[in-house]
Length: 369
Image (cartoon, rainbow, N blue to C red; front, top):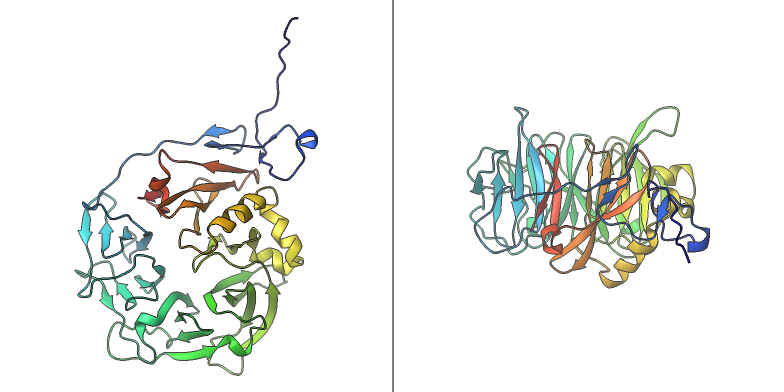
């Protein structure tokens, strides 16, 4: 019997883990590894090479760029006990302060050309990109070792206290790098209705109304998201609750990605963009960008229910969003979203340990192992 060949379309639609295989459109794939469904035609993931080494065997658990006042940037990375800077030329410098850290699972924000780090185990750190080492923040009012997350909103710093519903905010344009400026607490336990603790706070630009508004949000460990409008938490004349939504439980202290003016939460149910919450109900929001791959996120979250590896980054030059999926305690792979085609794929590096951490630096994806 003669065999007859036939031509099928390439998987330019990306992954589809939802549709029955006998009803699946030909542009989708049940499995797609290192093939990016971008514009025109799918392309193979580009290779990568070693950029720098810190000279020790400890794994890099955290990476983030610091954008400096002169327009240059430096990469900040952390192991369990060290903090380093890496220049665009690959020069590595130990920036660890006077106290040795005990955890490399930092959360960060850039404020006034400084990078602030919190991990809930060690004193919160700050570095301006030129000092010899990181320093402890000088804010008072709460132990800096209790601060697990940090954000900057409308020219103020906001810190999340670990295992509580409190966030602490600083004064207008106060950096906490000198003197003893006081932080003030705001307790969301009187607002959250589902218990749990506060995991993260942030900003969201709502552009669905006739005029854009910059909201302040907080999310609990139980998936309750509250939004506030106003200048800052201490201004009783303008500060007020404007919205509340219930989504799946977030999978970590940094399980969200800033995508242009949107924020995507990585939850046990899948990926939820904040913009979709304001346009539809939470169920529809859950299916707005991650419908075809949410089963993979849910399946992985059952194995790694709350982990520092649950995070991601947006690479605007490459028109894609990276969502990190843990595969072990020491590495993982990426779910990658194509902005232009709205398709998903998976990127697997030569070793899962090469993808323990990641970020965008020098306009390219960087990985830490």
